[in-house]
Amino acid sequence: MTDTFRNNDSKLKAEVRRVMDSRAASGLEGMIGGLEAIVINVQPERQKSAVQQLLETTGHGYRTAFERGGVRTCVLGLEGSADILVTARQEGDNPFRPFNTGPKGDALPDTRLETLVFKCPELEKVVEIQKGRGVRFMTDQPVRTDAWLFIQTEPSPYTGNSVGYIQWLGDEGQYVCEGASGLSWTFDKPDWPHLADIRELDHAATRVRAEERDKAIIEFMELTNYHFDFAIYVEALNSITNVARLTHDDYAMVFTSGIEPFRSVEESGPTELFIHNYNTRVHHLAFRTENIVETFEALGRHGMKFLVELVGSPEEGLRQTFTEGFEDTFIVNEYIHRYGGFDGFFTKSNVTMLTKATERQ
Ligand SMILES: [Fe+2]
Image 1 (tube, rainbow, N blue to C red):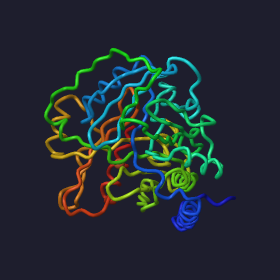
Image 2 (cartoon, rainbow, N blue to C red):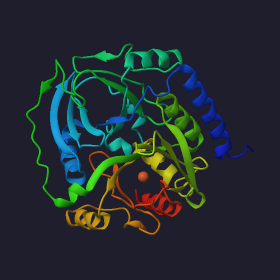
Image 3 (cartoon, rainbow, N blue to C red):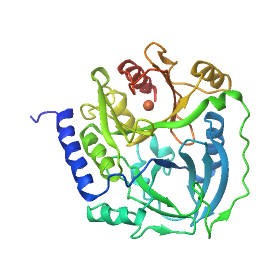
Image 4 (tube, protein in one colour):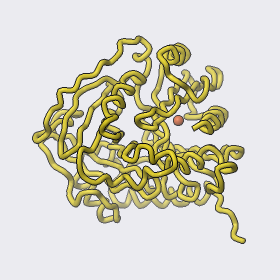
């Protein structure tokens, strides 16, 4: 009989030290900045409703829509936040499709958060260094337009996510370039006051298999300037929440995995069960939220369904909740309020209650 695989942080931390050293030696430190955009791909017939849903549940506003190279892109933005690009392929292969399968994921075979795009002011230099370290990109060379340079990695075998690098050549956030054709799509951003309290993208959480937790985190560190910060183990739910950060103020990257691998639907806990149903993917997008009690109530009045009530309290420093997964994207929204003076990032009790709530997915 073989021993059951079980995560522990001492192995991970040794790998973290190695990659931090190797990153520094390669000259990559300081070369890759913060998150500029996330790319959520959806089924073409659901693209407009996916955008409308985001407009009604976040502070982001509609900027523009265009088609380029067989892909239709809608741009949603908010000052101080990463942009949200909602895309749909009109033609061509989808390299992410193998990562979307599962008993529940199969319903929307092209739908997932595909790419996290980071700012890279010296993109060509970074790509040369990364190629020398064995990183595989989807194109041999960066794509150059009049507005930007862009390249992205092949989907990760551990997460199904791709990391993109963008260098703006003109105005920042100017995605529309020569050769793109504008789409005359319009959307109504509701003028509900509570939407103004939903602010920037705070973190996204990717669910990864227990046995690939270390590899997923190390790979992300190899591709960015993020460092591993801490992990919270919830033994009773077979779940670890791992946090990687760039700086104290930047978007954070969260990885959630089992402590031990999936065994069965009944006994593996909500984290490994989600992967069984939907494959490895971004599970939720967390938006920093002011006046969270009022915002939570107002969202409910407008029809939002939640997996859990607000968890946490001002005394603990943190209040959070999860919505149900959206029907056009599978993605859950988290709303998170950090009270003044709270210097931690998460609390174990909130992580436990939020993880428990995802049993219902
Ligand atoms: Fe979260």
